[in-house]
Image 1 (cartoon, rainbow, N blue to C red):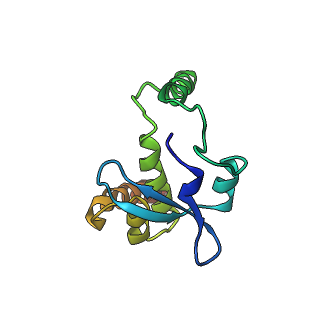
Image 2: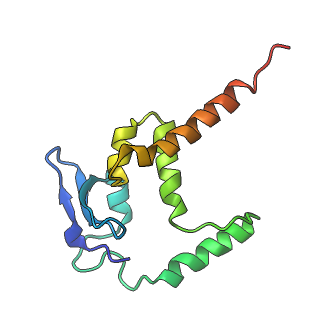
Length: 131
């Protein structure tokens, strides 16, 4: 909600990056973002990227989407962070890189996602049987 156009920059590799300061750990980080993600932010301007965006505008549609999908579990936008980590690891991104992208202080914090992926691999391996 507070993302500013001034938070974006160009990395040494000429890709886009974003400078953030995490709420929880107060850690500052410069993270790469895809060209697609940058384009989805809209036309470059000044000030806030998403002018007029409020928490209710974010949370209300999410509740409706969950209801329409008949998902009863309590899900917040923070859950997308967990999905991001799990999808990255499942796609083969190394745990150290995922840890840095999530701005975790220790890789051990990120290891829970690797364990989830290992469970999925085991489930997958057991789905095929010749018996």
